[in-house]
Image 1: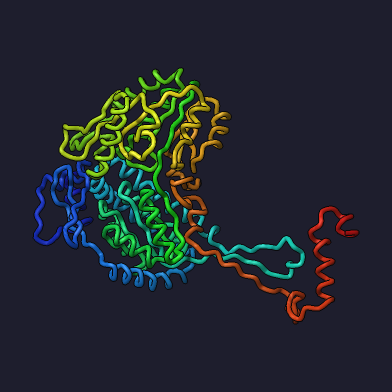
Image 2: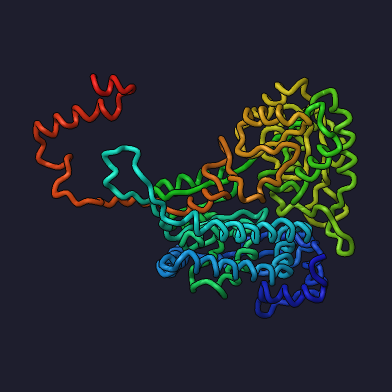
Length: 544
């Protein structure tokens, strides 16, 4: 546990603010800190009513921003951004590091809020979301000065040696973030770090399912950054569309279908953007793999956050000679996974975050079973609990005519398909409209590296899975319908910048050779220069 029930009651009120006149049972406050709660959302006029679907008790009402309010918020942020952009990179770094310290100081409150909104274990709230956010600050503040420094360049063409060349990174202005519900603090807090370091202001539209983590980020930021530099607007899809329509750059993380709508809206104003979308990430197990490690990795990679991650293992391809043994080991791993809203004992996975997502998981499993798949373990709702719990599930006998192998499930389900060899495994792994992440398990790492280059995915792990996402030195982005652009690495900082080229004359001739008037002498000069500069071979350069 990261907090005691007594401290949770205090911190919860600090975080959320109790609506006037509202009363909450003491049990609700205690459960917030004990990884019981899952957030759900009820639309009620101009309010988003966030409730705890594990108890169906109301948590907080969050208002829906109107279009004019969102545009006004962006205008205020843009005013603040002008002053922020004038500050040195060193000043921005100092403030971001104070922001990281504030995250550490408030980690219990943050974890309690995450748990309340998502139903995930407190350990994942801390070890994934809070760790990730702090690590992003640490990484980007270490590389920002060098990455954002204006770069002097020298032309390779001798004719331009008289020119001074420089490339500067300038902020876009206001970056609009539309963030998802599966990691509400991480995707809000961690993502805005490079945008702020680059000199931008940020306006965040969190998911209507999990708005409270975003509001907490806004509150923490308000104590350190210039007023209105970091703002949150809450609402539904209409709010996201409004933000896309007035931001200077858009960062979206979410589903493919919504990502296409965001891209279409951004096209109206030619607003640059990056999209991290869905995944149907394959894991390949070859016959020489360490099956115990492969099984343990698969169980975690598919089930952490109840499978609600774009990088979750969603398809497993195992060579036939070891498929039976691997399945046996995997089922043993899954049997040990502890699920539930247990207040008194640690858990490994919690509930689904919404009834809609639970319904998708059920429909995919039902479709697979109807078409001949076999349930090795799980395969149904966890009826021991009131909330949106689905049992950790392993399926065998799956094929690519099943939804479970082709569409993003986003739930705690592991479908296993036996393949005859690595060539078939590669073919099946690439048989998808998605291309986000993949994993290969084999003792032959040279072979694995060769196979990795043949997988059409933005990231590949060898004898590991998913951890690459929290290693900021590596870029992360998708191929095919899994997205456009990437986050992390130095490029994850410079994407929030516009490159401005600057050329300065060094010697000050009264007239350049390419300027007016065009004369026969100038034409003769260039007719001689072109072969001299661009023909291959010294003899041909001179003799023509």
